[in-house]
Length: 63
Length: 482
Image (tube, helix red, strand yellow):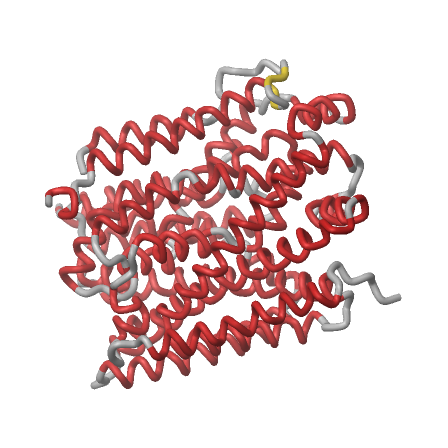
């Protein structure tokens, strides 16, 4: 696996931490900083799923 | 005074039927065995398809802590406990780094344990033994803490009719029987039942809570009124701790030996890839759902102390059962799911320790042993380990528990041996061993020395140990080359 997917996955993993968002206003029952984190976790999961598909070719796909 | 049982007679009958059906699955696993080889016993003949592989990965990765501990953590920690969802997601991110290559190598060299890879790659017996010992210590901890948890659940479920000791002994016996009957095949099949029960339990409790208490928007508003500080964003030190917590899972949980064995056990690359692609979404529907239970509990039952908050899921379930008696089945389902989660973790850890003792320690030094002798020996090891674990779980003094709690901090230290071994061909085993030693020493000193902060600058001891571990590997490699 090349370095690109590794870097992308690490970047999104780190980005789940609410580093620069501190608003305590509420959105869907969560303070905005927590809602941001939740959205980033969803995005991180989708990215990992995509990277596994894109950068891990398997014999099954080749057929 | 005898405490009130959490479930009625029919609930107990359901739970007993479920538990004894697991022995039936063990017998089925024995009938399905193909030969007496280690590969058949410890990796189910390397033939797991997507459904079984996914459910066994799922049931193994989510322990009793998910069902009981996470909701309590959410109750006490407020919204900052969201880090536990990232914690579980990051494990699959770590697999992305090494699972594809490790799987290919496992097929080529017929690995059974993590030690097999380490030995094949570095050809350094001391390093292999060090990795195996760290893994056994970490897994031993896993078994002990989960056995303790199962004892408490049995006492709570039966109202003390079955004691803590009896509960641990009976459930341990069931686990060791089905495990030695069919090995990984039985464990994986029971994991299928346990995984479905776990997922079903979490989903149902989540839906019931939405219907009964009105979901997160109402809970959020109540939490803000009752306890506004839970809405506060993490400080910079807490943000570093957040990242460090995620790091512990990324580097520690991902190298659990029983998880690595499941990578080896996949039928082919495709089944492994698909299973991991499903697994990556599981924290959102398991950890996250249990967090919501904790937050809804915080909104409905504020002011619980630390010990009571650990029971928040049970408190919520009892409240729902009191309002709607028909909902008592949710409590039965939840308790069964919690027991299932614990059993699936313990049996996998037990199998992994047994395989490491048999293959990496006995097998490496035995003059001659054929596969069927080793398999038989592995079964004997399973019984001895389980007996030892049961005695410790019942009698271990609290002071020793502190030492046992450092499993993830220790496991992190073997991550470089795997990752560097797969991706950097020029690194020597002696450098990895030196790094591992430095990493373990730093982690243990930081944790056990009460004069030092256990999380300097908000970062866990294990992550500091890992940083020094990696730096030491490169430094030692540089000097060895010179």
